[in-house]
Structures are given as structure tokens and as C-alpha cells.
Length: 166
Image (tube, rainbow, N blue to C red; front, side):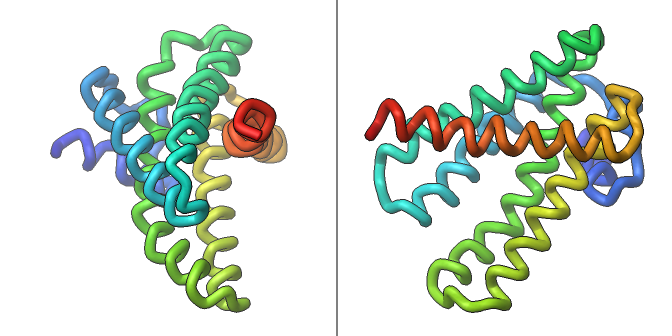
């Protein structure tokens, strides 16, 4: 529980990812929780068991994108911290998103979509801040990296699943 107190301020932009402790156990737990949370959200939207394959792709693309960016920046030694931070923040946002996704699915009205958009913007801003700290770039550049992160992980998983799964 102590490690949660270190990582949680990241969601409110109050700490740098480079100041956080490394823990492979925390990383593994976050990866498992991430898979379960994204699967739960995905399954609610598609009601198809094949969504497990798409969520597996999302998880692999997430970790692959982080690894590639860190390798290109020659900061791969921070992988456990960065991946833990991104997965943890994605998990925190997912906890809030689960009831919102249900609301969007049932209501399909403007307030539900607006709320969903706000949480997705918050998620994108968190990821941008993490990449800004790690890559030591300015805010616009970190927002671009964050956008590519979302396009690669979510769009890439959807695209690969569409090609493979039909």
C-alpha cells in the first residue's frame, strides 16, 4: 500500500515519474489489473468474447510502445517506473471510466459523452506529463507522444483485431 501513496499523486500531476520507486511486483500487478479493467470496459461495449484478444493486443501494444520510446530515447533503464506509472494512471482512470461507460452505453446522451471525453482528456494529459518528464521534452511534444501512444495502443489494437478477426 505504501507504493500507492507514491504513485497516486501522479494522477494529479504532483510528482515526477522519475522520483517514483521501482517495483517489478507493482508493475506486474498493474499490468494484470490493466488487462482486467480494459477487458471489462471492452466487453461492456462489444459483448463479444473476442474482445479478450483485442485487450491482449492493447496491453502488448501499450508495453511495446513504452519500450520503443524509451529505447529510442536511450532511457530504457526507467521502463519499470514508466510502465508502472502509465499502467497505474490508466487503472485509476479506468476505475472512474467503468461507470461512465455503462452510462454512455445506456443513456447515449450528450452529458454522458461529454463526461467520457473529459476523462479521456485527463488520461491523455497524464500520459503526456509522464512522457514529458521521462523524455525531457516540452509540453506540445509530450502531447504529440501521448497522442501517438493512444493511436498506437487503442487504434492499433482495433486495427490489428479488425484485420485478423474480421
